[in-house]
Length: 186
Image (tube, rainbow, N blue to C red; front, side, top):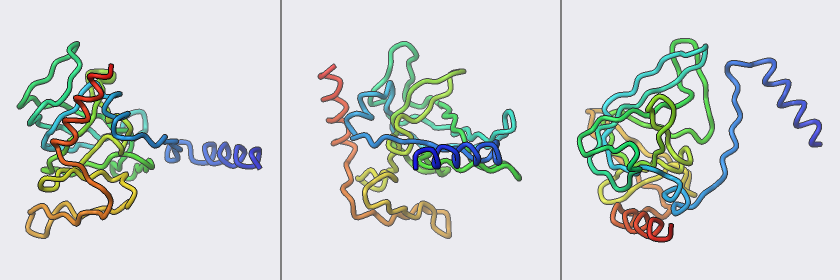
């Protein structure tokens, strides 16, 4: 059976080399994600730009930092800074690349996100979808929650609306306490 799965995976990659990617995402608890992150910020999504590089779609998400909850001193960021996240995948014209477990941002939304600094001073989300929380009032909603419920982020007139999943959500204060705890344990 394993040989069959390996052969099928290889055949898929050979047949669709530019559009098929497989990801394996290990489920991590919030403490692990926050411990692995060099940066944790509250921010607003200013812009999402898609472009093709080496025949592969990427998205560049520009965030305006509202508050820094944790940061690596080697490259400091501050309140009101604009930082850019680079994500593999997305769609640019006829090029589309879907990746399971990829975090999804929406322009003008407020987010709480765990980041690390990658190549060329672009950030990436720690734990993929597990490191991105959407701010919904006093709660933080993660798309990887057990309920797997997505929520409406934009209303018809441009306002943000949320249908809160039934799974457990945390507040920003609870997340700050978790960050503080994992930092103390280092």
